[in-house]
Length: 267
Length: 297
Image 1 (cartoon, one colour):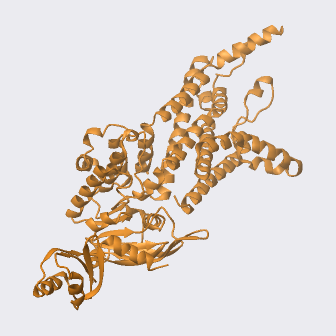
Image 2 (cartoon, chains in turn yellow, orange):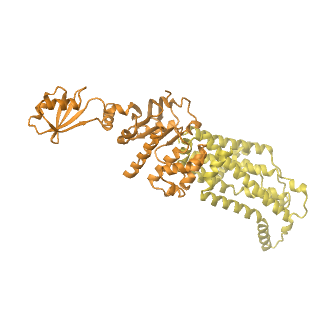
Image 3 (cartoon, one colour):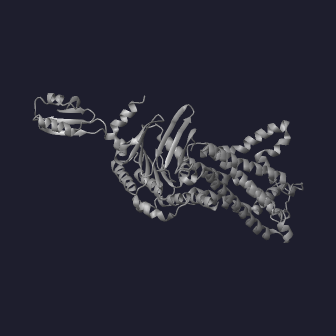
């Protein structure tokens, strides 16, 4: 297993585009996650312009345990960057025809796919680790009182965050394997939320019960929008197992479709 | 002796086009097996099936007596069509990656780089290499894990005469090491120079297969020149003569089966004719190849 991961990393670690995209991703992730207070100040200033006062210190976005859910939800928005990297990595293998040479040299098609999936797992785990560290630091700085109990509350959002990233990277990988051209794949990737929203709107008219089963809807449900809680609204501040099951099923399906496509095609 | 490669009824159809049709073939250890055929005759598709990148429509094949799988492919060095590497990686790193895929030690890299004379350029990116260097790197990569079988598909394609000579020398070096080689090419000259056996594909059908040594056998033709006025009549009187053609001031005598140039020479001498020029012309692979192809419409 590690052998296959090492093969894919060998391809990527000398590829400048990989470092640039991953560097930008983790940089944006880090800076973005750490600048929530700046955002709040900006919001407070805007409020002041309208004549009302907002005490930002009373909005505990960086307090344990809120910080976990807040950070994870926001970081989820950046996963598209990582997904584009995955698309480039897999479509390159078609453009350069290196997939063909890999198979000739003795890699099985399944092993080729595993090597890409393992990289997806690694990138997802790195995202999780990054957010955990930033969450821990900002939480320790901003939480008025520290309690271990508050710190370990809501940690279940981390496995959910892992699922969210891995789900999306699996989708990008499958799309890359099906389309094989980077430009077209990236466009389809970007259009997916729009297309799904249009279909969902139609389906909503006659079978609203199906909506939670839509792929992007399922990750949206897995980690719900946390900020309405600061406007005194009830939010779901836990992970529902049914949502997780739907996300896992989609992730497995994406990787399996990718495998079927790879197995059947002449490369 | 067990064949290294055994192909049974191998067929590949792309929609309505049959690229390879019911091919049966066996390759034995130590052979240098030439696969001939015009462009588009199914050579690369056949090799693609043998290397697991094209799924056969029908038929089967076995390597070393075993059904094909990816572990067996690791023991075969193959370059199909043109060299394929990661353009942004250096020659050295590309070979390191290939060593990982083939699960062999990277210790062989300096040796193979040396063999193809790329040691000086090993740290340059692959995309900066000339076509000849790319071809040589591909051969280096195929030799990495000391394969017992080497598959080369048009290894001299697109090379200048010097590049062709370099690759040919390299092939001879490899042959001298006792490896089995399958060489696909449409350059007949190349096949005749290095191969021990050859097969001819035409529109996906295997139309001929046999040893290269047989090519020169069969009827022979002799070019004759002599300063005798009635040379024509003398030659006709020889009972081994099948036909005579005048060609650029000399006579081209086609001999019947069983007669050779020495028989003709002796006959002329007995008749008191001394030939100033007597040149037996063996059939070239090129000629035979064209005959085989034209015989199967």
